[in-house]
Image (tube, rainbow, N blue to C red):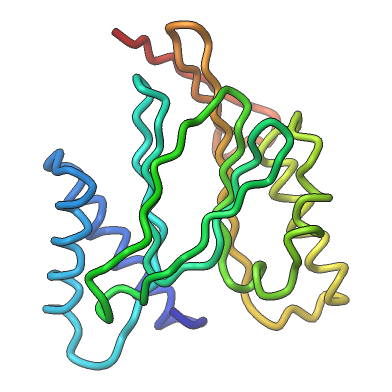
Length: 195
């Protein structure tokens, strides 16, 4: 998508569209097809977007990962780093996407990166930063971003975007933990009971 304000607007527009389509409880495949159609209709010039789309079923503990022109996705599973590559063109250029169905275990980490990270860090470097696998996702994100800044002497060649998700399963209960917005020390958790 590039960088700067135009890239921000494209990303924001794509996310709003996905959010709106998701509210209708369509399947992931239907949402992606509709997103491509909407994106094509809205584009009056050459705009291209890359996309990682995740659908996580907490009952089956399976994740569907759809990649459209995006960089490698990493999953830390049992202290092994698995890679999921993209074989598709960006949104609007192709109706094909790379899709994967992945079994998630408690303690697995999912890392979605922008090319500002993946183009400047090797898989081995990335693994050395996350291999412990017992850290909070916020700590892992900070560690990766700080490593990138140090590696580039604070002269980054691109913007850095990183999303880290940790799967936590407890018997018949899924616990989702997140940090509350204004207070760094405050955290909240909510529980979702499964059938």
